[in-house]
Image (cartoon, rainbow, N blue to C red; front, side, top):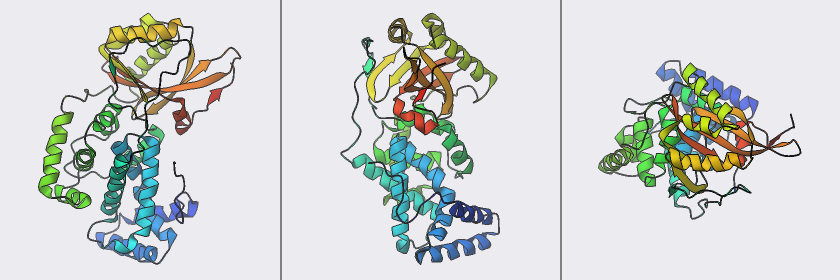
Length: 366
């Protein structure tokens, strides 16, 4: 069940945000001044002051949400893990000895909550093809990762701008939130995911990661080496810059083509284009296979209107199926992965994701 409120410590009160802002502003003071402020807040929080606890944790909340998403590949699971992290931190303040920063301590809790989620037997199952009157063509493969969800840029931008990176971070923040990267992470053993994200994305030192995972530095370095080797060659090159004229032109051509012109659509795809539809496991790799898929959909008479949004730093669209009544019902969320002047991948997600992006379940008739 998805949690939405942390008992005792609600996170969205205006006064809490005001206190958190004061705490954040204090970080520009001298190091000694900030330590005094944090020590005072910690003492108050340990005495049961929820406002002080929020002031300590709120500056890290967004980045922890993104961290849980990278670990789990699911927006809803990440939200649950974040709430469990904050609740555990609230209940475990007495055990915080101050040997590491509050931020490092919170990352330790969040990472272990995500590892627990991976071990849970209640992982999400695959779903069947759900387009009436359209028979899917033979896929080129079945997805190794059937549960994946996109992350709204509206939540992402603030989190990435506030995330301090250690000197050992190897990945740019935009690259490290792309669908290709998050998908690739889900193919790794969970502890390798944790090590790679903490070391190569966030830049924590090996000794810090070892402390978070109750492991040795040697074990952390070994897991990191294996994770890097597994990811090598799986990640595409950089796409056009977000919001650039090249991206805007390609997106506009896609919108025009997807509504009715399959031939025009195919000209926008790379030869090795990849289409996936999690949690439906069917995958289509290569322009010929994708041509059969899109051809069957468009030739069936299905027509959709696309409402632009952004996910994982990439162009995305809410898709609304035109009904005979004139009402347009949400039928999915599309995310495009661009490569140069072409579309490298197309990922279709379930319509349940639309509200996360501030999009309605349906649109009125034109």
